Length: 268
Image (cartoon, rainbow, N blue to C red; front, side, top):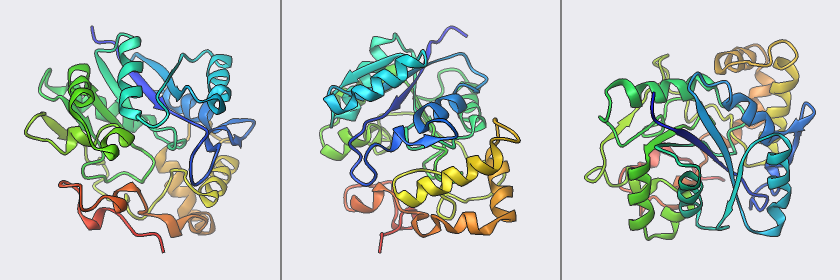
């Protein structure tokens, strides 16, 4: 494989709902590092880059990345599309992955399967994700794109929500891009019922419990291991079940052409 694959993990301390969430401790390390450990288990040769902002509050993220041998790029606080693009360009990417830092339980199998589809027929796709529509439990978000695809989005996206969320310009313009979507191989759709991401204190409590139960037995625990745990211990599932299906789409249903109301939930 000749492509240089760069995984960009966007992270900042100024989360509006749970400030500093990426630095919260889980089993002796920060959530950010725990997530990177999982991403590193991909079968593909990748460069992982943490992309944070130039805001002084994010010095701690840069220090955390460097302390664990992970490159860090610093850019705009609010224009995440620009930050993502410039981080990828700085590291000479041919293919870029977006995996948000609020996915500390991501299954490396989701990364591998999405890249498998992207490379199945060379140059067939500009962009492949497992999100449009999503079927995996929320928190297994993988988006793969060519550098040319990301660059076009960077140059042409204009709406604030396109800049904030990095990739909507791509999947909202299928007339410009060759787009593929990976469905979860189980045939299930748990995207609106199971929440493995982090935005709220309850999500953090959920993640801590998952690590407490699974990590000592198998540090490389999978999505299926988590699902089995939740079946065996439904009280863990209930910790953050009230937020299942809550995502940023709910605030932009009038703007998004490719997202329906069934793909989000209003927070009551």
